[in-house]
Length: 541
Image (cartoon, rainbow, N blue to C red):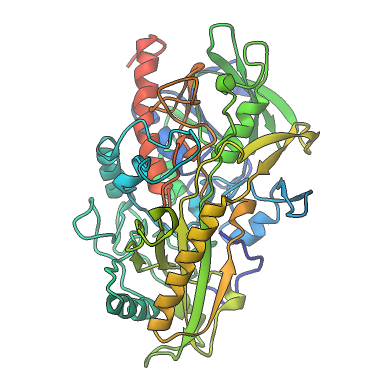
């Protein structure tokens, strides 16, 4: 997703409200916990880490959550936060390197869920085994489990998050959000082209749910914090309810520098830097859940070099960091005359969910190069400076899965960052096959917009190759340790008390927004964390 720098309009109705996790935005380490051995340390507080922590705490385990970022002031937006965050090295397209890579979704308590649009898809059966059409040069793109295995975890999360919309008859979902004026025009155009549009599935309350308000549709959604709590971000759904729980401890501003592995292949501790005091701490635990995202998780494992892991924890096969996939995407937009009753001068007309209609008619398409297309959905502008006040903008995005390749990888630089550890390098080049597929899909987007009567059609690149909100594949899952990093439960083959629960595990990225699937995998993996601890008799339940 392209990140647009800017500020909210001064008349935006962002109410101040108390932080349910306490008034301090920065926690740091509490030295009273020095020497303590936790049942589980969860590294990362975003989509997957929050789900895992919630499940493990409710099973009676003593859980410490470490988050490199901080709690957010209610008024802080994504663009302002991005300006404060560390970048990565990426190819500059001229044979050199630039420091404009983006290794985060966002760096803060709750991760990218605080700013995402809530798109919550179940992956299609094809995404679990695309091998009939996807040739990844010898890489196995089949997941170690199928959609039926993940279905009950999808069900639990759909109810917990209060997901609305989606295809008819799929999952435990509430009524869809009303379509925007743009979505109504896109619906008519799509049906005229023979498409079968449906409401985008969203983790945003249409009605009050789970103690959270209904969406008031009175502010921009993507890249902005929800002012009412209607959006089911990780903080409001999973972390805030754990506040004060005797089994849960949260520390923000704590950057995990490396894991330490002993002779028995178990990881015994994580060394962290308190970003406030600039002091390092060694934190011990029986199990470790890594949920930093596919770039940050692989960088952490690669930094974790020692006598028993000379190439980094989990890097027995040399695959940690390799197979990075970020999905290709592009926006296409046009304008039409405003339908009667639409007040374009009022910026709140553009508030509420960022997407209310979606198309999967080209998800598998024999006319698309390789036979694998992508999705198309409404994607409203989230930058107040670019909102049109003289016409109605129809803005859509196409997203498609990229072919995994060992050449696309996360690695470590010889240069050190401000914390004295190797800088992160995102070494990614789009596959020419995928670029042809993207061109095909953007042509389909143009067809849809022109059918809707749009003029001034233009394309907007998403800069996906510099980093993305869709990160997968750097700790590939599989049953053979020689060709994978983790097993189907996310358990690291060569460090069996370490579990990767973010998108790193995906051997194929799928062609849809991955958040719900990553969360379902994290919920499933938490079952293995508990089972392994009990089997080792490390805890009593």
